[in-house]
Structures are given as C-alpha cells and as structure tokens.
Length: 84
View 1 (cartoon, rainbow, N blue to C red):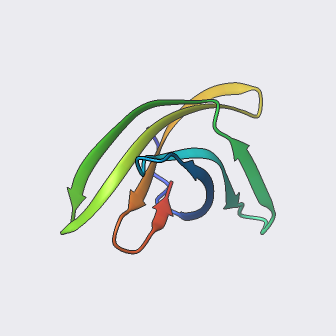
View 2 (view 1 turned 90 degrees about the vertical axis):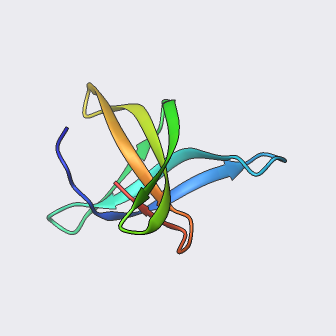
C-alpha cells in the first residue's frame, strides 16, 4: 500500500453511541485541484497509538478512476485530524 500521509477533509455521520462512520473525503491533487472520493465500504475499524497519539484507523474500499482501491483513513482523536 502506497503511503500518502496527507491531511484530508472528511465527511462522516455519527450514530447515537458515538461511532463515527466516514462517507466521503476530499484530497488536494498535485495540480491544486480537489478530488472527492465516495467511500463505498468500511472494511474494518481499529484503534492504534502512533507517536503517543490515539488514532482510529478505518480500512476502506472505493472505486477510484475506474479501479477498486483499498486505503486507510487515520482519525486522530485528540485533534480531530484525518490523514489518508
């Protein structure tokens, strides 16, 4: 899996128990345009501690440019920042 490690804008919904469910995200391209990716399926959700920061890792699946891709979104709980 290619590591991008770029902050992104994520749209999500939260159920009554506080579980976050990602819906889509936006990422800036090299040519300064914005791509919006719809998340087709959340495969798994795990918690991890990275450099002392607690993160929720979403393994997701989407069709991007006609090909099915699997990627991870990392949501940092303390700062509410999402990273691809």
